Image 1 (cartoon, rainbow, N blue to C red):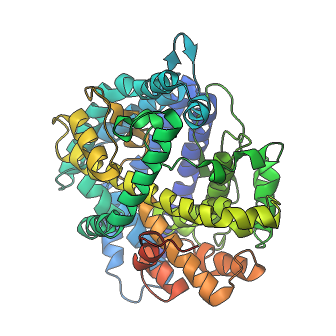
Image 2 (image 1 turned 180 degrees about the vertical axis):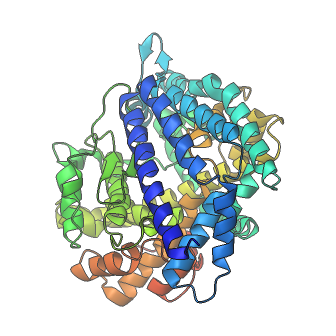
Length: 530
């Protein structure tokens, strides 16, 4: 008779082999834009998902979970397997179809180049225009161009949404969104209640700071505030706050080595990441995914980061963010079984990534790692604190916009989604829509295709990052960049990997479960804390 130990051992061996095939194919698809690798990714992802689709294995896992005297490690492996399997108790042809559709759409995103007046624009070039150009007509044209991919993918994306819903309904859920929350160990009602409360608690501050921002932009472009449209901001989705002249740190990065600064930052904590550069892909080129991500290829130390680095503040912070993910992956306990050698939840790795990403605006970091002189930093500090608050509020509102819309997308994909998108953007982000809202601008966001029911983890990660930072500065060291901080992160946060669920992990480190009050206290008050 098969024992629990032999069952887990055999399953971990199979999972490890198929996982590596899928992550390797994904990496090649993202870095080459080659349709052949997109097809291989679809095949590898299907095989990996099919491993979790066996009804027999699913029933065995449920039975083993009822065993008495399970060890902590055994029980957690079974719990995670059960969640993974529940979402894959589907016919093989359904799993293959979903993988194929997702992979083909991803290829469209990676290979699509928007055009303006016959010239193709990369994501970095569009970003540069939205940050620096005073030419309002050009800004408007590149903004609309950045959304064109939405028209390209809309039809197939909506079909994929409906296919995901059909699959979820086969498993007893109303739709894919409901299933996504349940299988991520997230209470959907609780998360939406937290987000609604964040809107309420931040409303006065957000409206005040957004008004001030719009007045600044109106002056910059010589227009009235009521004439401000989405292309007057620095990001196509208003995901981030435009820096003022005093908080635009881009000039400090000219001629600077972003990779070396990243190394120095992590080294100060005793976290070594420079060995990960050899297999990473950090600089832009054609047909490569134009965004950024981190991938743990084998859970044995092959951790890779994809970036498209330029000498500016955005890519500095992005590199810090992605190597935050990488550090977490690298330092998980290699003695744990394969199934536990990963993060305890997406939101826990987002918390670490965001903790490091926002260091690019921290006066302490600017002095120590970017080597900005003390007088300049002291002059910048009050404005940077205010900008950081605005950035967090803008980011939170953007994430909530995405999350609220995505729920509606899965609950009724046949409604007027284009109108719903701009209604949500207007009500949550307070952004005035363009004159025409007939285009599928929402579909230009790749996460609807590539990472469904994922976006809430970014804001939950911000809440956790705020809680973790406050704990470190209160109980470990007011100076973040110390070996003591690094030891806490490595030994208490990274090393236990997925042994504990996300709320137990933050509780074990800080002494309390996830508490949004820390984020609210720092970012949602009218008086900003520097």
